[in-house]
Length: 124
Image 1 (cartoon, rainbow, N blue to C red):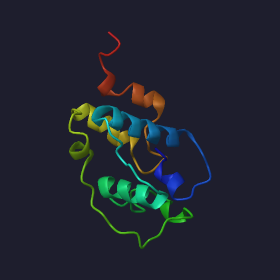
Image 2 (image 1 turned 30 degrees about the vertical axis):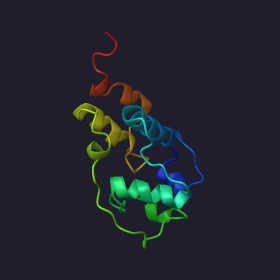
Image 3 (image 1 turned 90 degrees about the vertical axis):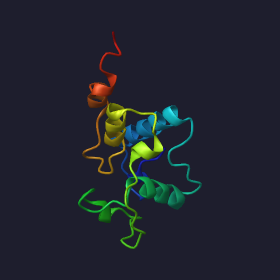
């Protein structure tokens, strides 16, 4: 459940990395299987890329500065999380996409996630 920035060599650890893990757990709770079941760091990052698409500097400013980022990585188009987590409705997919946003600076925070429409009415 490691965030892509960790897999690509970031040595800084912050809350957005935990939110990525929350997204992985959320998806697994819905499907009963891991979303990115890699058996090595490179296998895991490529599994992420195959589902979410290979990130670009436009998607994730600063990615090219990560130690293990290679501009020669294969380029995959996103397949969409709905194809991998078909049991989730639109609000659930929207939340999952925000949890699994490549750029940690724009990834949803825990506070914002709890305010997401997916959870509306669950406290009644």
